Amino acid sequence: MNARDKKFMTAGIIIALIIAVLAPFLASPNPDGLESTAEKVMPNPETEPVLESPLPDYTLPALGDSPFGGAVSMVIGTILVLAIAYGVGAVFRGREVAGEEGGDE
Image 1 (cartoon, one colour):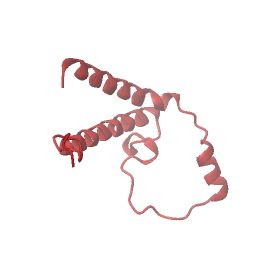
Image 2 (image 1 turned 90 degrees about the vertical axis):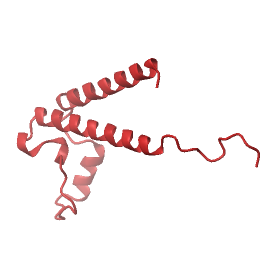
Image 3 (image 1 turned 180 degrees about the vertical axis):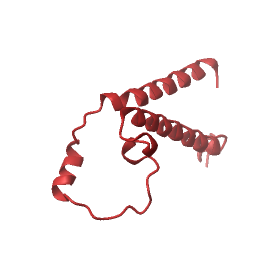
Image 4 (image 1 turned 45 degrees about the vertical axis):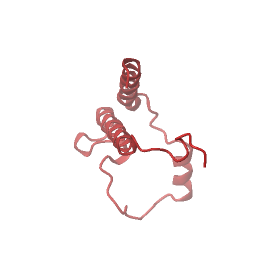
């Protein structure tokens, strides 16, 4: 990876983290269309989740339902997604894609 690509990747990561920090402070407390419709169709869902979410509703249980908890949870989620994407890229790096060798078959 050359220096220009590293700068581009670094800028993208910084922008993603800035958005993650600011999003909870800019989010509307009113549910969006999909969530609002789901509440109207199924007002009292009585089902228990199969797996407990580590960051339920974009919050950290230890910090409560504050925008700061949302910001921390968004940063954690962003870092996890970037780490998973990097890991998947590292696994597939160097593997040849079928048909890219340029040979005639």
